[in-house]
Structure formats: C-alpha cells, structure tokens
Length: 283
Ligand SMILES: *[C@@H]1O[C@H](CO)[C@@H](O)[C@H](O)[C@H]1NC(C)=O
Image (cartoon, rainbow, N blue to C red; front, top):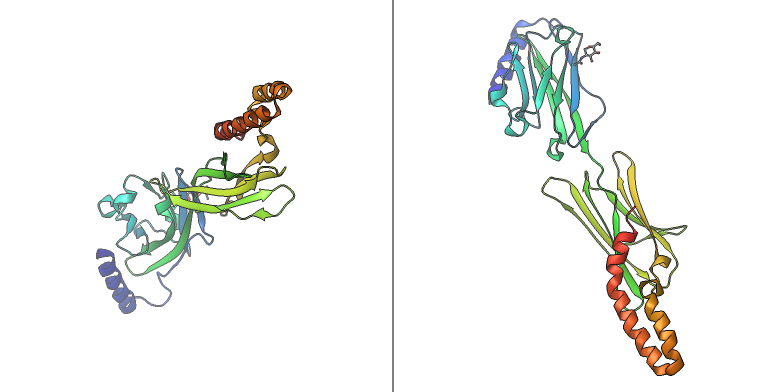
C-alpha cells in the first residue's frame, strides 16, 4: 500500500509544484532481457537521464506490483523490513555511482522463480519515474543418458533421461544421417528445485544398424547436450558367448537340442540387456 500512497502524493506535488522539465528525469533500465543462471548471481542496473544525483531519492525494485518489493532504498539506507520473503538475504543495493544517477541491484542464488518482469522506480521530492525490464533464468542440466530394454519380439525400447534444466528444454532423437525420430513417449516434469526433468522414449528395431542420439537443448543459451548409442552394439551373441559355443557343441549331438538352447539363451540375454547398456552409453 505505502508505495502507492507515496506515488499519489508525489504525483500531486509534481503536478502542482514543478515547472515542466525541472527536476524531471527518465529512468533507463536494461534494454535486453537479463539472463541469470540458476544458483549464481546477477547484477541489474538502472540509471537516470540526465545523470543527476539520486542520493536523496528513494529507489525501489519490485516485481509485477509495487507491494512485491525486491529491494527498497530510501533516506540513504536499505529498508529490508518490507522486502518479499523470497528475496530476504539475497539482494544488495549497489550505490557507488548513485551521485551520477546510476544504481544497481545484485541478486544472489538465482532461482527459477526469479524469472519475470522487474521495475526500478526512482522518486525524488518532486518527481518519479520508472523503467521496466525482464530477467530470464536459465541453466543447462546433466548430460543425457540412454537406457535400453527389450521391447516386443524384434523391438527394443530406448529411454533418454536428463535432469536439471531450465526453462523447459527441447528433446530430440536423431538417427545418424537420418531424419528426426518421433518419440513414442515423452514427459517433462518440474522437480522440487524448480528445474525440469525430461524423459523420452523411442522404439527401435533390434536388427537395425542405426546410430541413434538423444539431444537435449536449452533454447535460451543455444546449448545442447547429446548422447549417442549404436544399435549394432546390442547384438545378442556378445551377451552370451559361452552359450554359443555350447550350442555349437550340442549341434553335433542333436539339431533339435541346439534350437532349444539358443532359445533359452536369447531369453536370458534380453534380461541382461538393460544393465549392460546402462553402462555402455555413459559418455
Ligand atoms: C560505477 O561506475 C564505474 C565506472 O564507470 C563502473 O566501472 C562500475 O561498474 C560502476 N558500478 C556499478 C555498481 O554500476
């Protein structure tokens, strides 16, 4: 409430008392959105034009509405009591250039919820003005990881997972020298820390020799992380070499027996694929 009352008072004062132009100023904030990294700090600055001394002005930084105070500086001191709880202990008003009309605010430990519109508002005894600017919060997550498990008879299911992204990343499956593959299943969920966890699956033919990769992309930073897996690596005899030899031996005895041992081995190999390829594809 209070900022509003003060503003109305100042508005009346400026209408009644000021001669046009005198004591007036423009506030200039960041023209481009400010990119802030999760967990790090960001400095946003606003300055007056003309560059007049702002030492005796009140400077407020707020979110969408003036009662959402991020930081309040007035009568030569910080007023922390009206600050929104989520910014407590995370802001520092930088006033080394305040006599030239330039101030800045440092926000520590950036979180996803810091993203959005901000206002810096200057108020002198006769005039007030403000600038609005935008803060974009971002972070790139972990390198993706592909997990493979057997699907139906000739299929296998590949699942790509990665965590710790903001904002929502783009997920793409690619076949080497091929088109993008459409995922059969995809989820992007926000975890407790406000960051995105993504999971995307495709189904691939066991006999295909394709090289497949999963790419996760942060669209703000144009950063991508990729993991690559070769489907040809997942052939069965590698999983069960002893049984192949054993089967050959048995084939000397009975052709029928060979068939059944291979069948058993194949089923076993399916079961062990999951673990084996979990390790294989870590880069
Ligand atoms: C104050 O001005 C100096 C010189 O222009 C500059 O290097 C410094 O970064 C400014 N400080 C802030 C907090 O903006």
